[in-house]
Length: 91
Image (tube, rainbow, N blue to C red; front, top):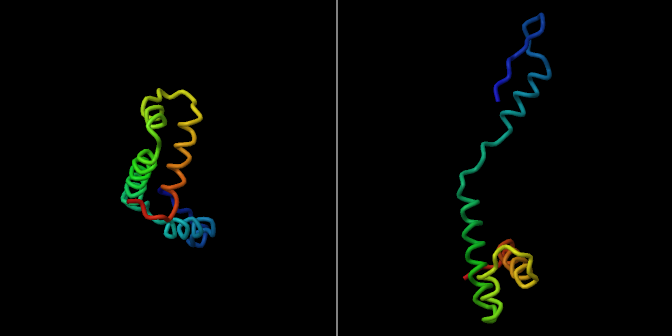
């Protein structure tokens, strides 16, 4: 974001402009997409691991779900999220 620098009559930058410049310097550039890719991979691994642990009838209910609200699918999603967001190693 570019801001026009305003100067007072003595030619000095105003305090607001100084603080804005300081904030811009302190703001970090967004990190590369690598961390989000790592999280996506964690979610995918968690999905596969939790799905593998489900009984057959739950697996078919989860896989065939067409977006309808379903208790089995909701519980499955909660387990996947908990595993993906945890510090546990997913293999």
